[in-house]
Length: 266
Image 1 (tube, rainbow, N blue to C red):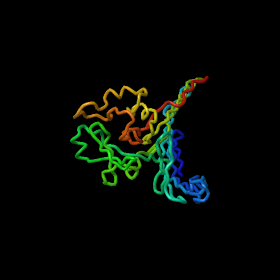
Image 2 (image 1 turned 90 degrees about the vertical axis):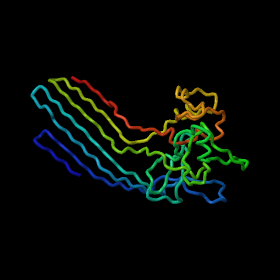
Image 3 (image 1 turned 120 degrees about the vertical axis):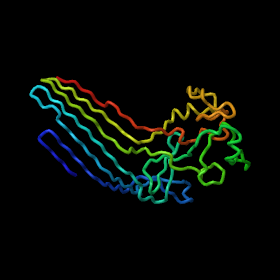
Image 4 (image 1 turned 45 degrees about the vertical axis):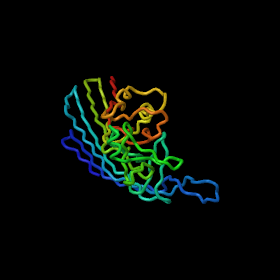
């Protein structure tokens, strides 16, 4: 780390860090004869690398009036480095996060989409289908979601799941202002985060178009006619094609800037 002070008005800090975590809490397979599948154990490893920087400037330094501005920024890269039994997924509000070597902790695991089939011609050209429990196949048609066929076998199943979001931000930090006039002081702190993904579970439930539940006004633009270009699939009771399955439809940009604290004191 480096700390710098100039002219008694400007201060700056910069820190690089590497953090290694051992005994990470993970799931591990039990022997079949135990009658159980998995158990929790401290047997994983994770690494964090990154930096944090801050800058504070006393812009006005008069006898009765002072104004100080400050800002900080941080960045880290999070990576799982060791697991006892390889990768695994954990269910979170009907979604999944994956724990896998080489991936950030808490990565969202699901299906990627590329829009909605506007017509049967588009659906026939893609030739995507699902395997039913009875061994038969059902093909996607107009108004169904267009899921990315990761393995290229034209069957949308578990093999097509991939990382669809990272909850860790690219940058984070604070912006601070301190103003004092005689005996009065006004302090404000803004916090921000940029580049982190979030899972909007409530929007997923309210845009499923698969039952008689209340839905949002986004349903007004659902697919209803051949050739229509939209991002909301058709309404179909029971959702036989799995259009509302956990996908990047419900992963959103979680970046924000918010006023965390404001204080007026005497």
